[in-house]
Length: 403
Image 1 (tube, rainbow, N blue to C red):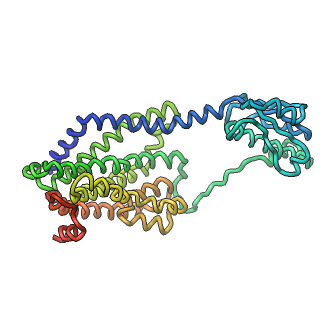
Image 2: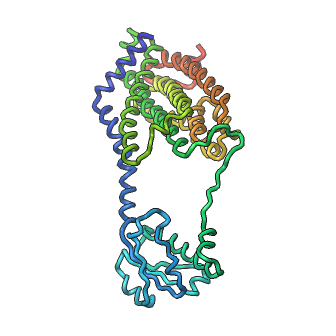
Image 3: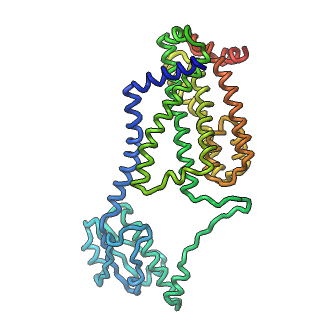
């Protein structure tokens, strides 16, 4: 264990002093924020421009147009003007003006069920909320023609929310943020599988290429080297996640007014963290062992895409899990070790009634699988890391594991 910690400290120091690693810690969240916010801001810029809509009203529908948009858009950005001009005059008036349009309410359009908004602009933009407002006005007009007063019209327009309340739920139903935010937090931890896993895989390849591994193995055993690499890169992954969260949580609190810490402190967070960290240990042992069997970085990089399909296996069953978190497919994925981490993160995020015995049983199976994989990976790593000149064949891998 002492040598394992030495290797882990060495890997941490070597990478923490690496400028590329330090830059990636801060550049990655900034790039994610950039690609997430810029398209939203640009789309918001296009959709929040003022728009004038002339209304030719032959039915008396103009008074029913609501004063608020169904998408919480600023009402002043949409101006409705009742016009006495004919459609041909309005067409000439708005031609070439991207922020104007007109609509005609007459008996023909009412009977056909099709209302057209004529404009010289392209795309939806501000027209999307306008469409909902006009539909609401037409609906209210039809109800009033049936002899209903405003109170009766409002009664029919009352929206209802249908909630599903399982009888087997013994705890209070969690809100959507309480479900999603702990799952996102655990998912970010699970992301270390791909970030740290790549570094672990490449580290074994690089040392094998530089013939450094022979010098290292003169001081430590192969098992200590493998475990130290896994532990070291695991800590590096946690450092990355820690920096990302230290930037993300205050941003969510201050900018988006989301009480992240309140939603994080829920009972489901503890098992989520366990399955995320256990998934890292499981997949990292596989990565570092397979990396040792590769001849060089070139052959390893071509094989790397196939290796990283392993932690993505839960994506194949995510649809059935969302449809039924307690169904047969979800339970099969729960007890299959290679899919357990991802499936349990999904189930604990979506469902509030995952049985405790399934959490404990799947956790136990995963823990025992990690021990088994670590032992097998240690045997494979011990032999393969000193093999040069070619990739290990499947027959050779089986032979090393048997012995």
